[in-house]
Image (cartoon, rainbow over all chains, first blue to last red; front, side, top):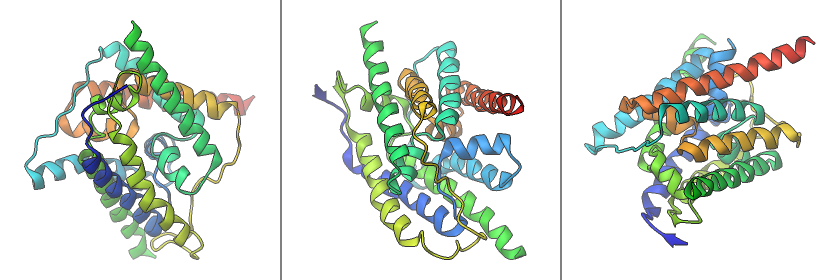
Length: 139
Length: 146
């Protein structure tokens, strides 16, 4: 194991900001943030649809606000083919709905309230994610 | 009532923005960063563990501090899942999600936030993710109807 590109300070700072969003949403709107839940409920149910829509719009505005105030470029790199992206999209969309949460819903909100269910989900998707990356490196 | 009704919308928008800024500051918006985190058997970038720690340090104590409040500020009641079922669906769903996450480094929050960068790849992922949401909903409704 070699440690590379380690950026603990921005990671921690970004995490604190995400934690603030979770807690504001909880105190004011009474809900816990899970992005797969918010996005799929927006698609599937009329309940809170406009709130869910606005949250998603906000999520997309966030990086633009960051860029505006810091004047820093946001670099991302996605190297997969469209086919692989579509397969992964289907896996992530269906998987998060079958298990009832993703990195935010289980990984942050669920673990925050010490939900055993969410702890097990998080350990599972982390292990499978790690094994998938390892498996890709063998090919 | 009318006033509170509108306020929850503003909170939703603002919380989405804050969440999106957090994903950007932490660089979790970059799938390459996520793949680095999952690559513990190779060149490992442990940074994203700190995103989780940072988020939990805030959300967990404040959740427990406020959970017994009578009601949230702009809603009639608290409304979150208290599902305790440990079943096959939890494991299978999480495993499918983990596989998709490991293939591309994309999970729902960062994927949606990265639409801001007008990245075609994220758009392909997000569209098919919504198809995935819908397929599960469809399969649930069919099973219920049986």
